[in-house]
Every structure is written in C-alpha cells, then in structure tokens.
Image (cartoon, rainbow, N blue to C red; front, side, top):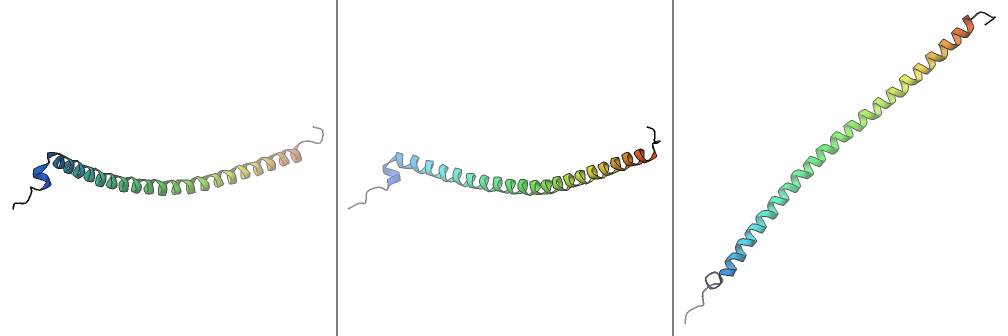
Length: 89
C-alpha cells in the first residue's frame, strides 16, 4: 500500500499559498524593522524638541529680563529729565 503524495506534489495551489505566506512573513518582518526605525527617529526628534523647548524657555526669560531692565532705564531717564528740567517748563 503506497502513501498518497504530500500536499506539495498533489496541489500546485498549496505551493503558491506557501510562497504567498513566505512573502507575507518577509513583509511583516520588514514592517517591524521599519516600525522600530521610525520609533527611534521619533525618540530622537522628541529629545531634540525637549532641548529646543528648554532653550526657548531660557531665551524668553532672558527677553523678559532685558525688557524689564529697559523699562527701568527708561523710567530712570524720565525721572532724571524731570529733575533736570528747569522749574518753568
């Protein structure tokens, strides 16, 4: 009594199905690698954004400090002008 041939020999559709599954697995693995790469890029971008946000906060604080110093200087100039102006003006 002989054994029936295996599925590959008996059905060419099985072989095509196997090829499709192999390609699908390869595409899935490639997609996972791409996903990992993109996650790494997002992590790097997020780190750069945190650095830039910190720099922006620092620069805004410096700008506010400078604006306050300028306002103080203008107030001192106005006060000096009023003190130095002749009484009749």
